[in-house]
Each structure stands twice: as C-alpha cells, then as structure tokens.
Length: 245
Ligand code: NDP
View 1 (tube, rainbow, N blue to C red):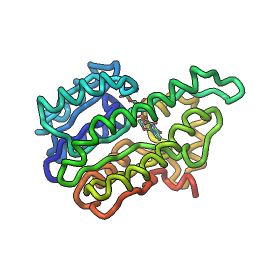
View 2: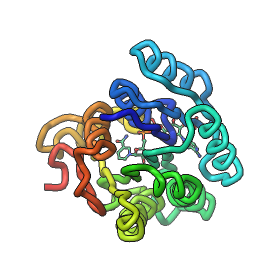
View 3: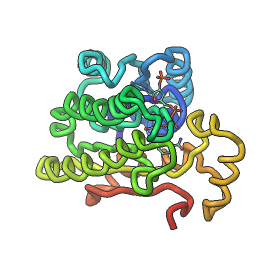
View 4: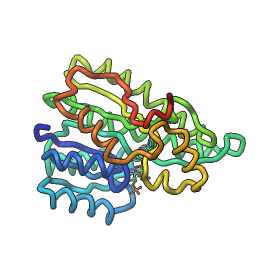
C-alpha cells in the first residue's frame, strides 16, 4: 500500500489493534485511537514503531464530538490530513430484550452509530480531499442475522450497513469509497469473555470450525484501504468462516 495516514478508532486492542498493526506494516502513518486504555494504546504504537512504522496514540471517546474534533487537531498537527478512516470502536451490553433498559440500548447505539457519525463527519473533508479516500466501517454478522441478547448491538450493526451504502453514494463523485467489513466471531476480548459452552457452539456452527483471527479481518480492511480496491464501494465483505451459510 502507498503511504497513507490512517485513523483506526478503538485500536488499543482486538480487531482495531490488528488493523492498526497491519497498516503500520504497510508503511502507513497510523492513529491508534482509544477511550480509556492508554497503556494498551502505547503498546500498539511501540509494536508499530518497532516494525519500522509510524504511529501516535490519541485518546478520544467517539461518543463525544468535541473529543473527536480534538483528535482531528492532534492528527493534523502530527501527520496532516487523513486518507483512511476505519470506524471500528465498539462495545456490547448483552441482555434479553425483555429486560433491556433504555440505558442498555443507548450506550450501545451511542458508540456504534453516534461514534461512526461523529468520526465520519469530522474526517469527511479529509477523505474527500485525499487522492483516493477510504471509509471503512466495521459491522458484524449479527447486523444481518440478529442474535439472542443483542437487540441493541444487532440494531446498531444493521444501521452501519445503511450508513455505509448512503455514504458510498454521496462520496462516489469525490473519488472516495465507503465499504463495510462484517466479521463473524473473532477471537478478541469481546468474544473470549463468552462462556466456553457458547464458544463451543459457535465453533460447531461455523463451517470452518473455529473462531476467526484479528489478522484475518485486518487483511480485508488493508485490501479495502489500498488502491487495489479502487472500483469497490458500498459493499459488505463478510469475514465469518461461512457462519451464515
Ligand atoms: P474489543 O472489546 O476487543 O476492543 C474494543 C476497542 O474499542 C477498544 O480499543 C476500546 O478502547 C475501544 N472503544 C470502546 N468504546 C470506545 C469509545 N466510546 N471511544 C473510543 N474507543 C472505544 O472489541 P473487538 O476488537 O472484538 O471489536 C472491534 C469491533 O469489531 C467492534 O465494532 C465490534 O462490534 C466489531 N466486531 C467484533 C467481533 C468479534 O467477534 N470480536 C465480530 C463482529 C464485529 P477502550 O478499552 O480504551 O475503551
């Protein structure tokens, strides 16, 4: 990939970390965003720099537009305008719908939907000005199929599909693409915290017979961020081991 400046929200661990490290290995300038885990974010920066890449850690809660704008100012000061935005930051707060409170609902939609809205609006002009800007949103298999105890999360992730397709239309004439990656169950803290019984069932239900790795998701994101994906926009690419077959 030619050298690009890439912001990856929520990249202090998990899938975001995998994407940030992958961009670093490709020779990009990487912004490692986090909300509350500075040590983990600095460890990602160290890993990128020790492999010859360039990175900074920037604290910003994506639900807070002022913090996102402050992040943009810091990024501009260090690297200049952004070529690639990956909206990856995410949380889950699982509970059966019957017991779901407004707070359970709001907190999940805030991070996934408001967070994606704030970051995309804040970096929109950068993406338009970039030679081949790239907007990549991380959704989920659950946004397509739903999942027990995840009405809030599934709703948010389904919303990301509509958001991405609309942005693909609005950005197309600017030469900027917008795509979605929809992972299945990937081995990160979010999934490792599930009871062993549920993880066994996920493996059984996945034709490839295992959880995915962050590197397998990062590979697809790196492709979408590169000039090799120049005629692909408005797409959802599944990375799920065949789980929805
Ligand atoms: P993790 O819980 O491992 O990591 C989440 C990351 O998001 C952390 O870096 C966390 O930072 C950050 N984050 C959370 N809230 C905010 C916020 N408000 N502002 C900024 N950063 C925030 O999650 P995963 O790596 O598993 O998931 C990453 C993305 O992939 C999410 O969007 C998730 O929904 C999606 N996904 C994951 C799947 C999986 O199987 N793991 C499957 C499908 C989709 P901090 O700790 O500092 O808050």
